Amino acid sequence: MLTTGEIKVGAAFMYNGAPLMVQRMLGQKSGRAGMVTRLRVKNIVTGQTMDLGIDAGEKFDEVDLDEHTMKLSYIDGDTYVFMDQESFEQFEMPKEDMGDNAGYVSPDDDIDLTITFYNGKPVGLNLPVNIARKITYCEPGVKGNTSGKATKPATLDTGITVQVPLFINEGERIMIDTRTGEFVERAKD
Image 1 (cartoon, rainbow, N blue to C red):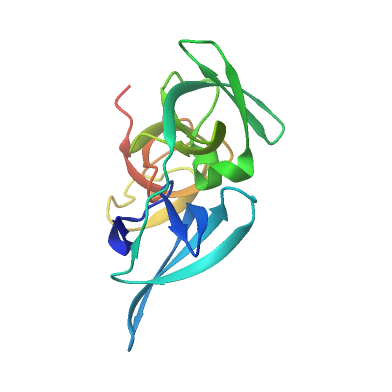
Image 2 (image 1 turned 60 degrees about the horizontal axis):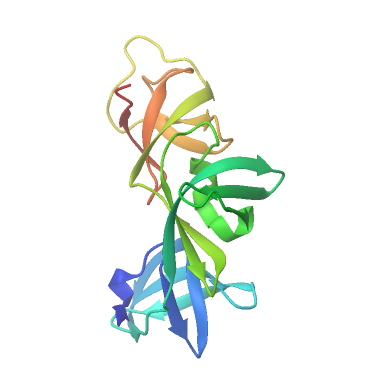
């Protein structure tokens, strides 16, 4: 059984008889009736995507999923192709099935990724908590910029934009928290 507090991106659960996978956390809202967690979920069987609000304390049955460790081989348009390192079998996954996780991976990375399967079909991707990415564009840092809470947008080598502190410059490698999409630190490599 999963509770509302245990649901995160990549989690799969049964809701009204349909297996759903969380693609994006849309936020939480509290009110008179209690906390409501808003999610963007995808029906694993039909592929339909919808926004869902669930109350705090609700319990859900988990969906039986298989997980395999693979590497991203290449990207063909909006299709990501992964290869099993033991059997050398390739599996394709549309970018939309990966949700927000698509912006954190590149074929140039040499990291193991966990692919989630439902009835033999790849339906989701689980990433390490922190991933290193290179900044391809951001406004230059200026001497005296604070290391505090002030941020600026930076475009990463995968094409997504994240907020980074003012002292970070173009060309630097940074660590990104894949759960929240936030800057963690400069990469130590």
